[in-house]
Each structure stands twice: as structure tokens, then as C-alpha cells.
Length: 425
Image 1 (cartoon, one colour):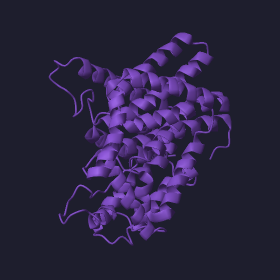
Image 2 (cartoon, rainbow, N blue to C red):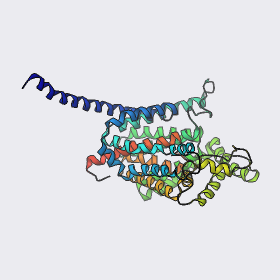
Image 3 (cartoon, one colour):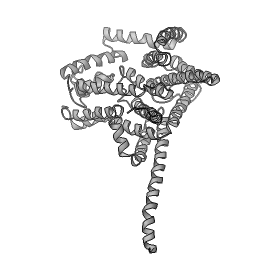
Image 4 (cartoon, rainbow, N blue to C red):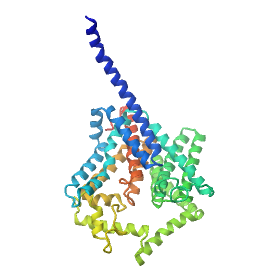
């Protein structure tokens, strides 16, 4: 054999090794970029957007087509794609300009990355870093929130509301509600393992997040979410008997919060006043707008119940029914503040069926009684409940929270089940 022929044999081997090492490094970069996304999500829209693009650039070259196919063919990974596909078809019968159709379709685009995340974290052991990074980001937000609330001399007062350092009180209280019940689940697990000091620490942190919701920045949707998650927590860990205990604890804690927090009491009472003012005088209020949007949305759905009016038609429909002759009025919106109605207006009962099937598939993904499965279950339940009052899959923070929450924890559950030999698709 000549020297030249020897080099020809070794070159492909060296190239193959280089490619494998490069893919491994890219996979590690992609894992850390998801951590960065989790850290940035509660704080910054622009940083999160940039990091998601960088994550996709790092991840895609590392993915195995067979792994992607496996996730796409599963209900948890395939149904989000099906909902996007229905929305894409919905652009064909929408009676609006194409720029509005594309804008409407872009509201669904987050769903496309769920199977990618499932594939990534089925193979990766970096999911715990993502969860830890997300929690640390929210712990910092909690600290800053209390500082802004109780130290009035600080020159920076946050974004809009006192005690809200970033984004808005709806997003903050929803994120903190997730932390409350994730920490309570962790506390129960630690207590059962007889790690009592750590269990107590987790409980104290949960109480601090809860205290911020009750006394600093109360989102009324978050109150409903916490009521549902309290029942879910006791059912998850204690079975049907726990539901009664959850009800009693909820009544006691709710009563204590009601009596001790003038702020919380005012927020709840204000809801009834807003409805009454709207009904009696027609004055624009937050609750009144929701009633107006929901009422009109039902009439739009009745006009095209099966396949809807098409993707991107929400604004035009509300515009045609708007009060007054002005082009833009208070009752014109692209967001009817209900996820099911937002989908039904555009895609009809077909789209709603796919949406509900997706939620059910994601709940089923977290059917194992593990702590990570509990974290994923919280994310799905929180989105389902909050979506009755908001179009949260279409919103930036809540939508990406759902996508990354389901994708990361779902991939971790699949990885664990695969290691155990369990037959979870």
C-alpha cells in the first residue's frame, strides 16, 4: 500500500470523527441555549426571541430524522403540528388580505417546536438545568418585586405596576402560581424521603411566592388557576380523598387571604363592579370588554361553525360589528380573551377539536406519578385554565412558557420512561 492510499483511508475516518464531535458540541450548546431561554422568558421578550433563533440554529443540525419522525407520529408531538396545519389551511378561505392571514397564522407558529423539544430532551440529560434556571430567574424576580414594593425610595419602580419588575402583573402572577405548586410538589416529595429540612425550605419559598400574589400583584386569572391546581395537587399525591382536604384548605386559606389583604379583596370586588358598570352605563372596563368580546365571538362562531371564518379574520369580524363609525374603536380586537373562542372563530369546531385533543394528549404525557411529570402537568393545567380568560397560546410569554414547559418536561418524562423500558410513545 502506498502512502497516498493510506492517507485516503484515514481521511474519511477523521472527517467522521470531526462531524460526530461537532454534533455533540452543538447539542450541548442547544441544551444551554434552552436554559438561557428559560432564564430570559420572565424578563425579556427581545432576548428570548433572539435566544430561540440561536437555539434552533444549534439544534437542527444535531437532530436525527428518525427521532423527529417518532415525536411527530406521537399525539403529544403530532397534534400541535396538526393544529398549525389546520390554521395554514384556514388561510385559504379567510376573506381578508394575505398579510392578515399570515399574521393570524404566525400566532400558531410556536407549536411547531414542541416535537423538536421532545426529541431534544428525550436524548438529553440537561432538562434539570432548564428547570433550575427558570426557577432561579423567578426567584430573582420575586426578590426584586418585594424590594420595589417595600422600598419606595428606589429610583426604578418597575414596569407599570408597583412590584412588577418586568412585563405585567398577569404574567408575573401566573408564573408565580406555577412556582407555588411546583415547590409544594417538591416539598411533598422531600417530606416522603424524610428530608424534612429541605421540605420545609421548599414550603417557605412557596409561601413567599403565594404571598407576593396575594399582597403585591394579584392577577385574577391566577386566583382561579391556584384554586384548580390546589385540588390537582392533593388529587395527584393523595388520591380522591385528597380532593376534600384540598377544598377545606382552600376555603381556610382563601378566607385568611381575603381578611388580611385589602389589595386582594379590592381586586376581587372590583371585578363585580366592572361588570355592573359596563352593563348599566356601557362604560369600558376590563371585565366588560371580556363580556363584549365573548358575546360577539359566539355570534361569529354560529355564522361558520364547522370550519370558521379562516385564519386571521378576527379583527375584521370585530371591526364590522364595532360600535360607532370610527375605523378603530375600543371593541375592535384580534384577541377575544379566550383561547377556545379565538380558535373557533377562525377554524371552527374542527380547530377546537384539535386544540382540545392536543391538551388531552399533553395531560396524558404526564400521567406518571413523578415530580417531573407533576411539573409538566402544572404547565398544561395552568394553560388550560388561563386560556378560558385569555388567548394564552397566542401570547408571547404564556405561549412560549407552554411550548418550552411541555417540550422540556415531556422530553424528560419520555427519557425516564424509555430508560425504564416503559411503552410511552
